[in-house]
Length: 386
Image (tube, rainbow, N blue to C red; front, side):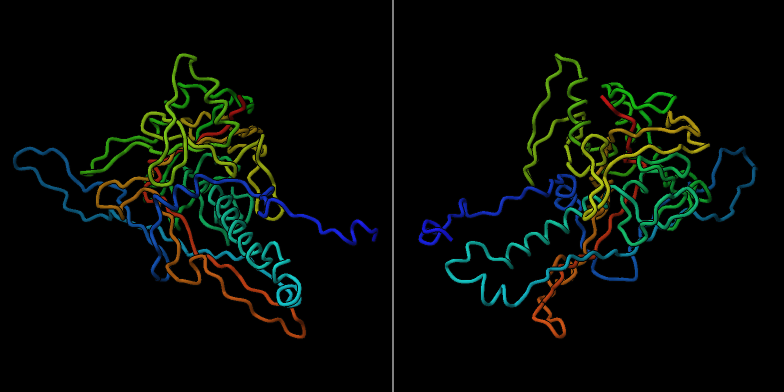
């Protein structure tokens, strides 16, 4: 060591650890603040839904009535899915080296912060995917993951953005006894050769209306209140709108994120949302990069998706309805469920010693899932490139 380094200490400034890895997920922040309903225990989560009317018809005097009793209700069921992030440390680092006035940063504190960000990023990416086993038209096995919106926003016939076709949702078969009650038709915005296309005001308006109904429930609302995409589709949408149209920048009063308004929906850009331009296949966090796939042989004609064709999803856009359809706050159309356990609600197990070593390790744990009680009030589209 030369004399200068032997007599002069180095400086660490500023005294913060700069995050150059993680991305932001306004979607996860939004549903955590607007749609969080604690899971207080039970074998599973269940949503009861109505899928057909009672029997009735006009009749003439003296006519007989059909008094057959038929089933009109069913229920989807979801398991709690668990995720962990381990925090390993060596006692020598904690008790001898990284301590006192010369420890600019706490190694333990920094690692615990990293663990929480890792947990959030994993959940944010999984939120856009599915939680079903591979088989049939499902290409990848994700049975241990949360049941995200790519499986919820499907119709059992048409590919979602990830190439999968989900014949079931919450253990219920679509297009069977329950008919189309659990369906949300994915929309294709590209051409009939499988190439992605431009996003337009007309396409967004039709997409928005696909997820809108005039609610029959008193106090209910049947229009999306949230639109989400990656920053590529976010920019394309703003670039393609008429020049004279002004975008009102708004800030959500609860959590402060800024977006622009489209009808009744706030449009947000999410860095972990599926994307061809900005997506990644991160080996540590998960895959949110869109990739080409061969479309179903029998997609719903209303999806505009060409049958049996190699399609390039490009960018993805989704409208969600996070509000309640009457019946109080518990009747929300999107539920983000987190265990109310102090440990599995994002808690830390504490450090546990390993055998024959000074290594200690603890886990940050989360038990959670996501539910879409009324899938028809949400919609997603893909095949966007400019």
